[in-house]
Image 1 (cartoon, rainbow, N blue to C red):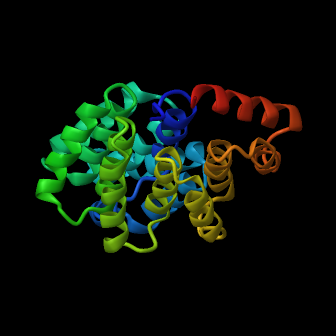
Image 2 (tube, rainbow, N blue to C red; image 1 turned 180 degrees about the horizontal axis):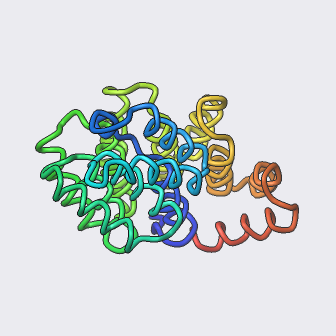
Length: 242
């Protein structure tokens, strides 16, 4: 069994900051601005996202949707303390707000996947059709090496939202870690064009590394990294995933 430490865990935890999906958040405030903030975050422009969301928040200081958008961007920028505070402020303004609960569960993921799992299951009891929460539950399960259960959670998310790229990518990584690297590669290649390319290539490189194709993984990462860094990254993944 491959223990989920190092590279695989880092890939997932880093991705969580930029893959938020909060359909309820925009209903609380200026929808166009918060959609723009979400889009910027999904494209990796967390600083831009934060500036837009803070602009909305300056006009509506207690707005739960704006608070969650600010917290999402803060989490993506690595400011976990500020993100935790703003998610809590959103919950104070709107008790039970699913987007804020999801954000707090994601923050817990890095330190304690079991705690994140419990928080996500509680959220899903209240919102059983929350595809983003189902996706993150899959990540929490994968981080505990429970790949079959994780894949079932990703499948449930995709049944609710077939276009949810984060669930499709995380399913592919889960398959690779569970020993189905070839199937994971196929799934990732089929996803081309539907997700931001750096994230897709990072996951594909992981699958290629697990499949024993270090040269292919290096070529994949070379689109985004200098050759020497790509080689070092693949070597590190291979070492950490043994």
